[in-house]
Structure formats: structure tokens, C-alpha cells
Amino acid sequence: MKSWTKGVVTLLLISSQAAFAGTVKTVASFSVLADIVKQVGGEHVEVASLVGPGGDPHTFEPTPQDSVLLKGSDVVFVSGLGLEGWMERLVQASGYQGKVIVASEGISTRKMDEDGEIITDPHAWNSAKNGEQYARNVMEALIDASPEDADYFRQHGQAYINKLEKLNRWAKKSFAGIPQEKRKVLTSHDAFGYFGQEYGVEFLSPVGFSTESEASANQVAKLIQQIKQRGIQAYFIENQTDPRLVEQIAKATGAKAGGELYPESLTESDGEAATYIDAFTHNVNIMLDSMK
Image 1 (tube, rainbow, N blue to C red):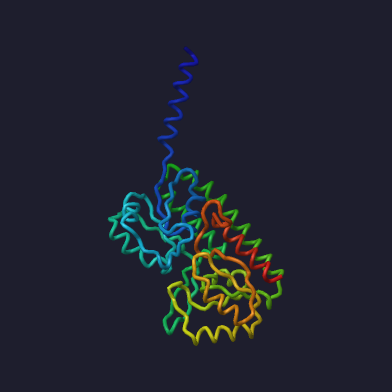
Image 2 (cartoon, rainbow, N blue to C red):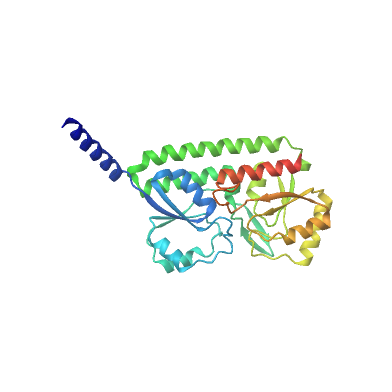
């Protein structure tokens, strides 16, 4: 009889704990941000990514199923800074009434002049230092959405932020060991501005902040000249972009293939860049290899 009573008490305790511990249904705009939400939220979040692994957040076109996904969620996360030009229309179409959290809030932004227009660089997460701020904003949003799980989110979130702090220190130290004149890279589009600013690396690319941009023949000729003048040795393709233009430029300059970068899209779970930390670590390592 005692063991039966004990079993009932145990079941009641488990049930009350399950009822107390909530699950926040979240939608993130793209795979990098979805992973940050997952790492901070742990077992107390469900995370769906609108732009999946290998997808391009610049050119994404939402479907009716995405509207359904949004409407059923508790919190929607975007990176902001102009990355998700399609999100406002999607939110309106879905009838979603909850909060849209801008994960880049509080970050000091970069700007550039594209054909006389001043544009904000949306790729803030490519600096691990900024990744820490993304994680803090996600953590606060999850605490706000589910106050009963505040302690869990703080503990989980801070542990993840600590990992990103360590990652940032490692990247800074690693690039500091490379002579400045060798810290130069050719990529498909201008996605590594924050990375370059944080770690002292110079990036050249044929197109601007968005993969939707197109380089003119004059721009390409000018870039080829710059690459030759600056002695850039390696070029990198990006997993979500067409590599043909950058390969054409590399052929004209003699730059060698350095590998594949993951600036704004993760791989599937069995790939080499399945998480934000994996992608950042991979990007740093293959750049360093090309510079040594």
C-alpha cells in the first residue's frame, strides 16, 4: 500500500512540474537565428525556422503554410536591420497578434553607400560579439513570454552567452596572430562586414549586402584590379549563393579556392555547420588556413 501511495505522489509531482514548466512556441526568420533561440530556450521552446538550412533569407518567398505557422506561435524572432524585407507582409497576412522580437536590438550597425543610397548592413550575427547580444535579446524575450521559466532561461541563456564570449576571444586571438597584410578575403557578397570589423579582416565582394544585388561589368573589372593590387590569395564561395561570378573573378586574378563559408545559412543537422557556433568556428578556421 505504501509503495502504491508513493507511486501516486511521484506521478502527481511529475504532473505538477510538467504543468508548471511551459513550452514557448517560437518562429525564427532564418536558420542561424532559429539555432540561437534553440540554444537559449532549450527544452522549454519549440523552434521553427521560416528559411530552412541552405536557404537565402534575402530572396525567401513565404508560403501560405508559413502564415499558419506564424499565427500558431507565441513569439516571432527576426534579425532585423532590413534582412527580412518579406516579414512585415507575412505577419499581416497571417493575422499573428503577438510580439515580433528584433534580435539585433542594441547592436551598433554598419552602413555603406550603394549607388548613392545609404544601406544598413543586416549581417550583424557574423561577429560572435554581436551573437552575444542576439542571445541576450532572445533570453529576455523568452523570459517575458514565460515568466515561470525565467530561472531556466537565465541559466541556459547565460551558459550559451559564455560560450559565445569564449568563441569571440578565440577568434580575436587567432586573427591577431596573422600579419595584417594577409588578412584579406574574396567572398560572393558583402556579408562579413561585422566580422571584418571585429577581427581585423578585409573582405572584397562583387555585390553588396543583398544576394539580390547584381554587379555591373565595370564593378567586376574594378574589383579584379583591387584584388591584384592588394594581393588577395584566396576566394570563398557561400553555401547559399551562386558561385559562378566569384569563380570568374578568381580565375582572372589567380586567387585559389579557400572553401565554403556559411555567413547566413546553416547546414542540415548532419552537416559541418549545423549550429551557429559550428558555422562561426568553421568560417574562422578555413579563413585562417587560407592566410597561413
